[in-house]
Image (tube, rainbow, N blue to C red):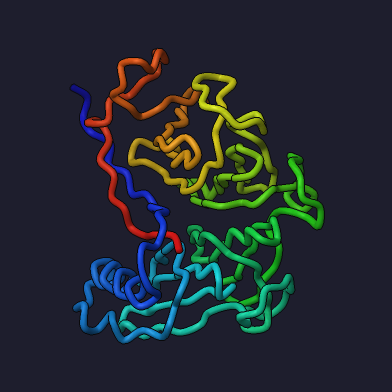
Length: 271
């Protein structure tokens, strides 16, 4: 059997109880990530809708809070504070503490410690410059839709999960377009998988059904939680073909990958 694939995946699941329980769950996760005791991690301000985590090379952990429309940062000492946003749902550029987001779902950090936000409600990918603290639009425009090309002219429809590869290319699960998009390090947007129509098709003309979380595997392939289909999908880096991670014998795809070959570590959750 081939060696297993180590995969760190943001796990988006539904909250099952009160706001306080969500805060406790996030606190325990942060304590594991940062090496803090659970007691230290519980000293958090109220975050009612933590969606995803990202960590930079300096030990800071960033948290996208969807309902608050804020981005939080926790340093290596366990101190947590608002890093960007005003708590108001809006679109505004400028300094991070004056900038506006609308339902940010995911965060990711590039090799230069710049922070990127899937600003889902604004259908944009936003960038927070590590040196200046300035928030700008990295990709996306005023118009909701599906359009490839230059990042500033591209169109998205509720970008959900984001993740960088080793070359600072950013991958986006464009949820309501049922597609996986790629923003190259040179600022060009392309669609690498999906047809804008929902479905559960593997191969070259793959279809997704509201793709959510996205992750890079240790094998350099892209993995996607295909939320509507309730399966884990794999986009092969060498061929671009899509397969489904499953043991079900009725899956006829010759790209079927047995579940035991993939080890998933879940590191965050949805509202």
